[in-house]
Image (cartoon, rainbow, N blue to C red):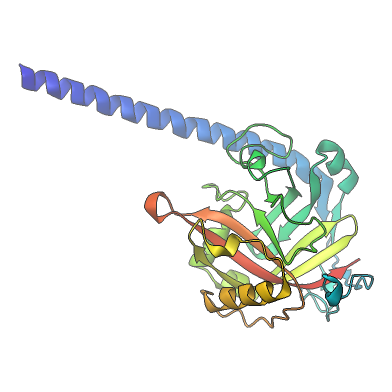
Length: 273
């Protein structure tokens, strides 16, 4: 009798676990759908023209010895001396969310999202661009970084969503390096112009890695770049000028004890109008 009772209890517990798991999966799918619909609406503020734009360098950047970086370069290689022509309604996006600071576009991974910066690094982990609470969150710049890309390292975070949204497509690089070796450029669009970055390293690191430290001097930055180059999974064949700053894309990778961060390092090749 006791064995039957224990068996029934076990079956009941198993059924409850399955029911809870199914409910959680359903809720996540609902959250994904809501976020997807929202970002589809936001996409109306952006379109990609068939014609690339000629890259005209902006030459009024602060000199390197003043704490900034020069941006002289022969232009991003989307096409010779051009960059993707995203026509973005920055004003509308800013009205929709005052925290909006720019638009991130990574052609090889089909990443195209608005970028925000909050007062901390927690809020946009759980809120969308329209400030709706949602597991997908939003792509955001570290609250300690400068929005004009003048920090030595500008950290940009996004969730590794199972449906491939947000930074979910970054995990493809672990098995398909040809995606980014064939098109290594990352673009960041603001009202003041377009920043082009070329990937020079990507790899997995522990969550509390020194890779997320704020770089405060050129010496620290030089050591940081050397560290990223030494840990790269693939030789990107990218010339790295340490007088130029970097953008770092970061997302979670793995789960449980194996949970790490997947990070992409890209050097600034130019600021264009």
